[in-house]
Length: 97
Image (cartoon, rainbow, N blue to C red; front, side, top):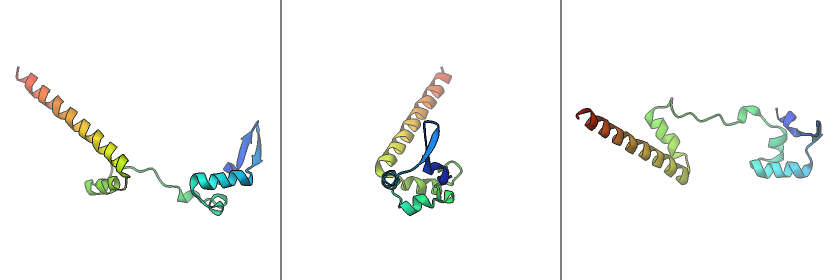
């Protein structure tokens, strides 16, 4: 895969990545040139899935987030819980009328 990525498409053809471009890629991806040139697809992080985890595992995964992302997740959950409580309240009170 990386061998294919080393050649950039340009007007229907291909060209090798220049040293300057390689240096920019090392900074962009925070990798060494060796890591880029000898890239191992098996080292690609897999998509994080939280739904199939236990509650404890879910909390451990949430703890890995930085503080800002954690705050956003908790605010979203708070909003959803509040909305559910209001829906339940109105459904229960309207049903009794």
